[in-house]
Amino acid sequence: MVDTTGLSLDQAPPIHLPLRLLLTAPWFAAAAGVVLMSVGEPALVSRWTPTALALTHLITVGFLGQAMCGALLQMLPVIAGAPVPGVRPVAALVHLALAAGAGFLAAGFLGSGGWALALGAAASVLGFGVFLAAVGVALVRARGAPATLGSLRLAGVALIPTLVLGASLVSALLGWVSLPAFATWVDLHLAWGLFGWVGLLIVGVGYQVVPMFHVTPAYPRALTRFLAPLLFAVLVAASVAALAGPGAWAEVAKGLAQGGAALGLSAFALVTLRLQRQRSRRRRDATLPHWWSAMGSLVAAAGAWGLGAPDSLIGVLLLVGVGIGLPSGMLFKIVPFLCWFHLQQRQIATGRFDVRVPHMHGFLPERLTRWQWWLHLGALVTLVAAVAEPRLTLPGGGLLLVASLLLAGLLGNAALRYRHTRALLGQPAMDLAVPEVGQ
Image (cartoon, rainbow, N blue to C red):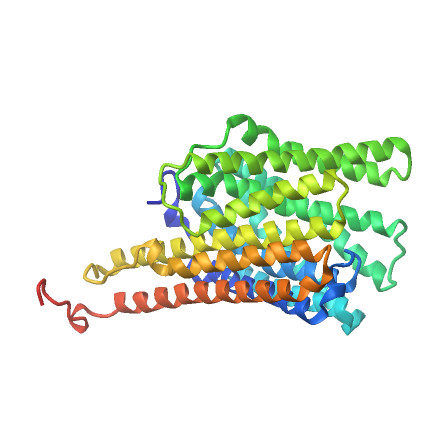
């Protein structure tokens, strides 16, 4: 059973607010699979190709952005007792803006024109900006869970340079501003987005959900105290080194900063794997394999960077292995937990204890969730191999498409089961004949 000790469950927002983001996210991973299949062999030749840029933003804005924002809208009130102000309009606006932003950015990179890039950048900045403003208020008010909150606060700060740099890069591509050393600014945008916003979010959320959902020991105090500040300091150092311009000391500082980020995230991955081996409940649900493959991808990406591997290989490991894999596993826990919790609350409110509320594992067919992970793993392995053998891009994209569609279908089915049970809880008792034992 999930350990809910210390959670402010009464502060949870209405389920449809985070759920709309969580259910939409997998469709953007599916769109990434379609793009890979459509473009084929040239897709992973370089990180600078239009296809690679479109894929990156479909995953980071469309999939990761919506999954993380939806999870935080739910988690912050529960773990810190700090509701997000204006959560109803915020959730609606963030959902629409991020979906539109990811779609228009991908279309712009794939050749639809500057207007699509401009709309995509504007929508993405609007969505993330509104989310950051509302969640920032909640994070300032939040109390308790210091390790998680500290990491989430730094992740929020890291989102600011990510958005500023992204908007500046699109403006330069459209010829609106002049941006010397364009590649350096791209590297900074990528670093603040992947290692700052996403990396610190994963670390902070992991501190909370791994012990809660997997019933493991807590993360070591030294790690929870120093890792997030270290990663943030590394990003600041890398930015200062990059902005200092060419030079031996700047390159040394940049290398040390990047190495620090790789080592810090690798340490988090290895500690997470060790804690999950020590879990009290030995049952292996669908979430665990996703965590294992994601943490393995994180360590592999750090090793690949240290060995000077192609950027496209590191990108596949981070974006597909971690960026799609880890949220997929978390969705298999978060969505059933939301459905189960809100139905429990509804049952207490209506007094309809004659209606059976499914347990958490009852919302998702276990066999299909395992198949989804195998499909995801097949996509990851095939796309890693496609960096060296481009002909594998097409089957890799196909596997990613099928895995993402299955993820979307499973989560949608859980939501439909929630809706059906909630409708039963709202009916008068006389409308539901409960058979006697032995009938």
